[in-house]
Image (cartoon, rainbow, N blue to C red; front, side):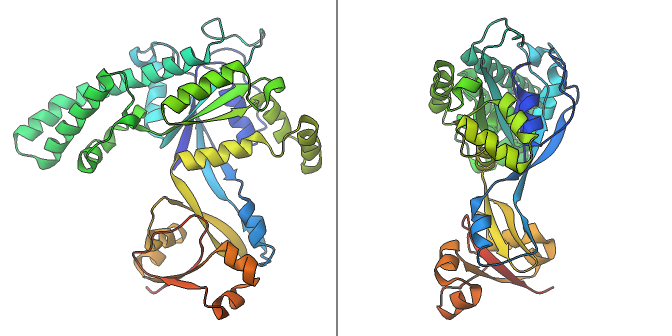
Length: 363
């Protein structure tokens, strides 16, 4: 699962990406399209539960969950018609599972805005419009072929035609496809199109250093816009976060204290992106390692075991599960077993965020 970072040129996308991935690459030039190919990076997802577990299980290493991010070059008005670098970048967005849109909420005369003025709502609407227009073009192009196959009795094509019709109707109302409730079979029939406005979205408000909590007027506008669309907003000063990311642990904490932040705002971004992707974590805990593993929400125990190794899913027998609260109460797995708190779950068990597991399997 991966998220793509998008936005207009010069809103701080690459600065945010470099900070998130602790990239030490040279800063990009201050002009549109400096990111020619999408950069990819891996981000750890901070989770204080890992440290809580290691109070009772002393492992050789601790491994957090990770998230893959793709930095996609700036989109401009008319991208769906080939303006700027156009469809080349739109195609990169089709390949990701969720969108993180960076919205400029800071003033800086040295950083040129592509439209000449700061208006985060206009920026958000520009991106949404371009993605909707690109989705319309994709659907209209695919429809004739699907209709021909449907006339021949192809059941999959019949579902695809119905799905395309529902999507085009929604887009004709200027509504993104993530707001459309669809029949699940129709949705699966059009999944291969990679429709961009169907993807979940998270907004990052890139703020000034004097508005780290995002209480300014521009951020409030972004929050209202996002709330109307059922999405979340995280305020971040990408410039400051990039500076913090380059420091060692001691200096980093000193800087955080000096600006009144309990943790880097990037930690909030990583967790929010993880949630936007519809992901959750379960843990394995032993002397070799304590590790967070990533599963989609509503994954079954065998599917969760398969994240570790496909053989574990194929030969799944049972999951032995306990909670962090049990561990903190009884101080160890042996004591949890003796207290009768270790649960034995079968193939239909739906994993819960924070489960601590052992999987039994045979192949």
